[in-house]
Image 1: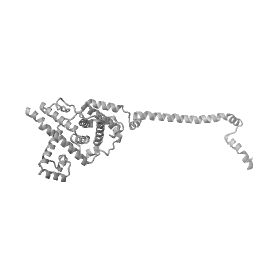
Image 2 (image 1 turned 30 degrees about the horizontal axis):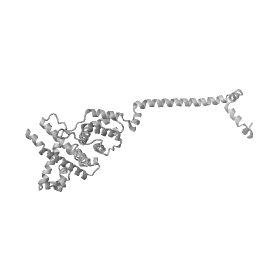
Image 3 (image 1 turned 30 degrees about the vertical axis):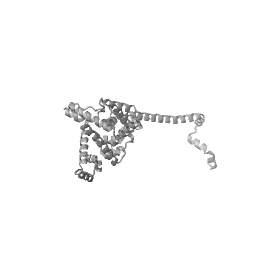
Image 4 (image 1 turned 90 degrees about the vertical axis):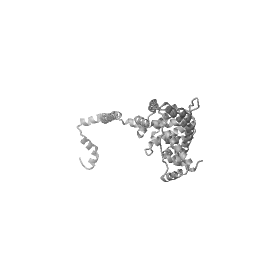
Length: 154
Length: 187
């Protein structure tokens, strides 16, 4: 015969009941030989189970697992992090700085080259101005000549 | 675990060293076979590595680990890939664990027989009873933690553990009053 309190006995020996429940089960055990017997059996079994030898995995298992993990494609987080390692970042920084300098120099050279090309294209005209002894200020006066004459200047 | 999620294999190795025995022991209680228990342990740890990003520090790591382990073992057993088998000897006794060498031959034999009796009783439990029982009796988890692992209520876990413990206790009692008694009388 079993009574409903039997369902509480495992939780009772595992210390999983509230103080009120514990008091109730204790009181019941005092008057129920069947539950006392079951409680003793459960306690004995739990104690014997704790003494059983535990399964011990082999050392080879560690090697197998780490090898399998090493062979997996690395997650994105690790890939992005690897780009910022000092060993990668420093050479990359140097390369970027070099590229910036080269581009800057190239840009300055390009601007100079553009001026050179403009000079080359208008070289003939500029030579004529030099021949007649005109300065850039004189050229400005020539440009504004019509307007100056209207104002009555010589 | 956060370092593992970022792909830190050294952190993963450290995590393995700390927890592999519990996981292997749990898997072994599940399938009762050393080779299969190691295969399951390997699957569980590789799965843990691959899905480490899903771990949230709000959850206790051991709970998270055993949730992965329990789900994997339950799924594999349901899929039929790993059956709960018992390697029987000539007298029909199931698989026996080796006893510690320091014990006397008779104590060692008794320990092996008890282990075999428990293994056979575990094999008769439902998967959830076996999971709850193994987590409680061999990993020392509290009912609340087991409830989190199994996504069940504490009341359900209490019931699972009681049925399982009582079932194993009855099997051990039967062994002690039957097969075990003559062995003692011979000593």
